[in-house]
Structures are given as structure tokens and as C-alpha cells.
Amino acid sequence: MAPFTVLHVCMGNICRSPMAERLLDRAVRDRLGGSSGADLVRSVSAGTGGWHEGEEMNPPAARQVRARGGSIDGFEARKLRGDFLDEADLILTATADQYDYVVALRPEAATRTFVLGEFGRLIASIDPSELPPAGTDADAVQARGEAIIAAAARLRDGDGPRPGDDLDDPWGRGDQTFQRIGDEIEDTTVPFAALLLP
Image 1: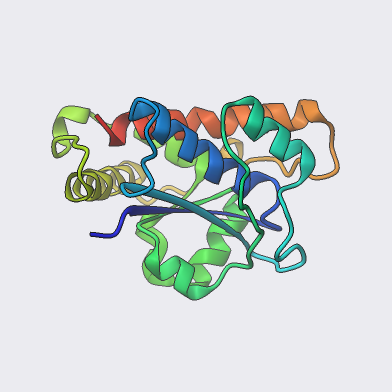
Image 2: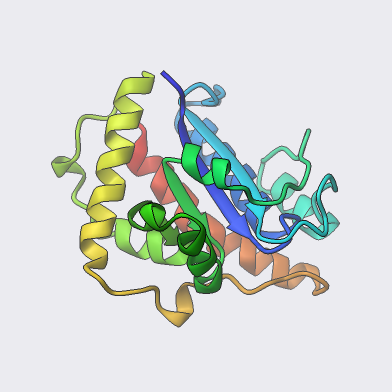
């Protein structure tokens, strides 16, 4: 079975979404006691614009990922395509505008697409006992992941994201801004990994 796939979306795919991609990877690895969870959870990213396609992560974003124990190896910015959305089990956007962009491309993806901060806020209210059992095989992770998404969609109950759910664009700003964005990303990725995996 394919790994549970999380697609992170921002504008240029060199700051926010690569940080989220690699910090979720690190949170999964931490949850699994240091072993790679790549066969269980696949964390990828893309940007709504293609200006930076093929580029490395923005240096202050890379510094944040490394400082938090993540890896930047092999990262290359990509422009968002419809097939990336089709193969993702969960889509996390940096802002509400990007959520709208995703849903305009793939209306059927609306129930599995969230602004990152919105998703973090919603999953904090999920009762883990109401989810399928957590496991370390692909089937268990897929079933639990799908149940988490369904529960978050129910909790959203037709409400959209709130203004505070957006991640500011840190591009061109200092390390302090990137540090704050890294903290906000981990406010969602760490609890999500904890909810998803045993």
C-alpha cells in the first residue's frame, strides 16, 4: 500500500511549504523512535507559482529546518499540478487564498484540504479513542489518517478558516520571522504526528 501522503502548499515552494514538508517528516521520525517513516507517511510540497521551480529551499527556511532536527537534502521547489492534488490524502495550505486556489483546481479535494493552522486547531478537539487503532503498518496509518481528516472536516462544520490560521509569508524577512513560522508549523505537525502514529 502507498504511504499516507500529505501535500503542503504555499506560493513559491521555497519557504513555508518546504519547512512544513520537512518538519512533518521530522515529527514522524521522532514519533517512530528515530526510524524513517517514509514508507508510512509521505510529506511533499508544491507552490501555486512556478517562479522558483528547481530551486533549493530559501536559506533562512533551511536554517530553521536544520535547527529543528530536520533534513533539507534533495529538496527542489515544484509548481503545483493537479496530479499532486489527486494523489494527496491530506492537503495543507499556508493560507486561505491557497486553500481557495486548490479547491478551484480540484473541488472534490475540499473535504481533505485545510489551512495548516486551521487543521492544527481542529485536530486538538479530536478524541483519539474515536479513531481506528494506531499502528505501524501502512493500512493502519491510512485508516487512522482518513479518520482524522473526516473528524476534522466534521468539526469544521461548514466554517472556513479564521484569519489567525494563515501562515505569514516570511520571504525576505529576518530569521526571527522564520523562527516564528517554524513554531507555528510545529504547532500543527507535531500534534498531527502524535495523533496519527502510535
